[in-house]
Image 1 (cartoon, rainbow, N blue to C red):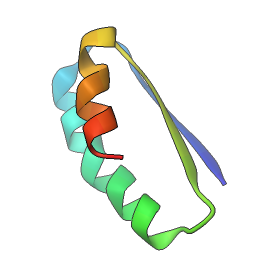
Image 2 (image 1 turned 90 degrees about the vertical axis):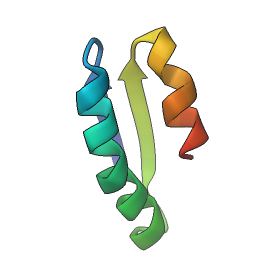
Image 3 (image 1 turned 90 degrees about the horizontal axis):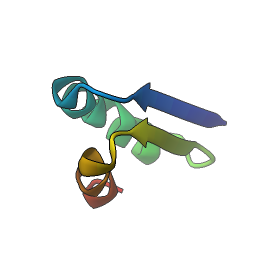
Amino acid sequence: MRVLFVKLSSLGDVVHTLPAAMDAWRSLPDVQIDWVVERGFAPLVQACE
């Protein structure tokens, strides 16, 4: 399964989405999660992978 989160300009929305993404990573062994965020938010998302 592939999931794409697209949030270009809202840090709060990215932060609120991270727990759901982390739950998916833990519970769905075949999930591939990708993000489209502002460049400045990328380190936050990468730190949670």
